[in-house]
Length: 412
Image (cartoon, rainbow, N blue to C red; front, side, top):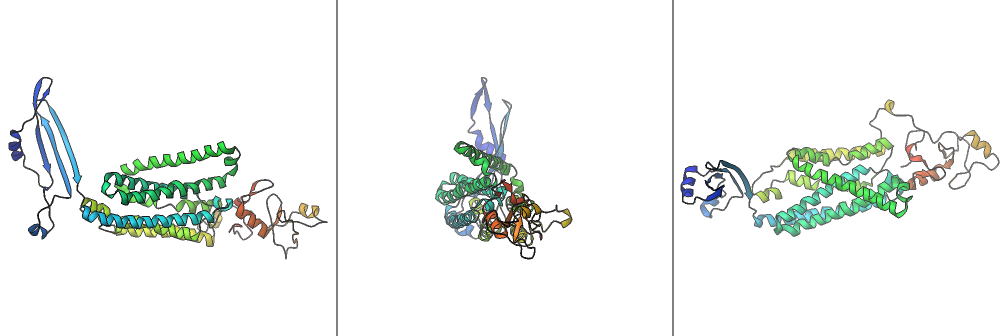
């Protein structure tokens, strides 16, 4: 900083006193400011090229009047953007992020197809998808603000905002609604069209209320931005907890799991890992130095979450919980109740789904018995549970206790 000497400033200002009337009294104001360097150049360029205005200008000082007992403190800061350097980088950033958005849309549609049945959708954590949707909404708002602040780069940032809007407002919100419907279909459909509209309105209201709370929170806690980023990129943790609580496996298609995990890392790795990213180009100076430690932590943290999800699929949703802390599990391979055998002594035991006979001899048995004493072929019940969570006679939620004697989930 090169402050302007007050004495010289006063000599120049004595010829330009501005007189204001306050209560019939003349007030003489003295302006006392210091500013940043008026010109800047880079190394050898100072001797060859004409000095250029600085990238960042700051001015601090005060305006005071002893006659009228007035004193105002002033702090300002402005920055200049070198469009020759910024525009190509903004275009490259826009192209990269647009490709990432298109890939994410493809992964989301693949996951929607994978979990189109009620049973498959009910295994997905609503908080997990909602957290990712909030993250996409924040990125959309951020790029919209950049469109307003830097109109010269409107096209570059508007395309990113548009695709992020499609992701969170259309695709992910559709997925959130689908998950909510699969968990409680009667609440959505029993009341008819009006009830459905009411439930949809509640879901959207909750989502945008959380978004409105998150935006100012991030602004006020920006000093802890690294912790906020780590929290935002913990979006697989709710699914890990849901798997352990509900004893469910394989909530996501592998392409979706790996694809979303990799593509979501692109923007933070770009900000933390590249010294000449857009923010530094905007300001003309390295306000945000590379943080390779943060890059490593983000990659390891995301990889750890994906690893736990894959281990839950192979070793069981509660593999990390000691067996002595786990509650007893219902065995679907329990013997067929005597009352069922006696009632079907003449015609034999039939599968309640396919109505074919069931082998009752212990050595040849291939059936499951539910807590309501209905007997099914193992394949029939498995296929049924892949489509619906409830048994159509008593609306019994079979997925909560669907385990065989080896403690393996029936739904795979």
